[in-house]
Length: 189
Image (spheres, rainbow, N blue to C red):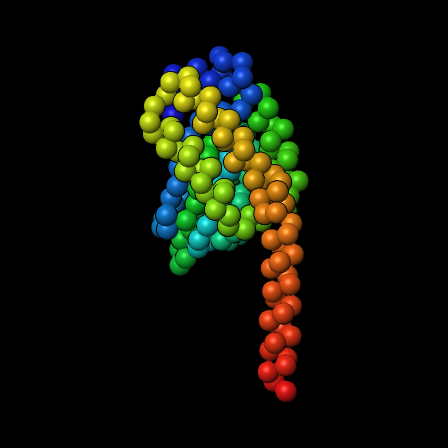
């Protein structure tokens, strides 16, 4: 986003809590690579929906696969990139704000060494697309309020994934799996 738009976010009390500074989607991002010796001033979330990538954070080499996300707190030295053979497809966002550190803490609770699990969910993708389309349509204060409120919900899908799918759907899936197992055993007889 243009820096003058980011300044509007910083100056608005409600927006200053959490706001997007950069956002995008890279499909099959061959040769994607980034190195920041001193980190960057924003937090970064990278959500892998295909292929795989890697990162080095705090000296740890990490692999990020489809259905996983990477959290990089602000000002932390890092390198990351797409796998050469199976380049990742990623939704990514840089964000900041007074409360952004609290979101990072919540995101990291579900992670092992900055990598968390995030099974594909259509609701998450719809939220991202809504944020992106809103941003493409303008930078008015109303646009900024709406997209940054939606971004908070988007982050919530990673912090609290159990609320994306109602429990009865998970139970139904387990029952169907059990039923299929029973059928296959019976067919073998």
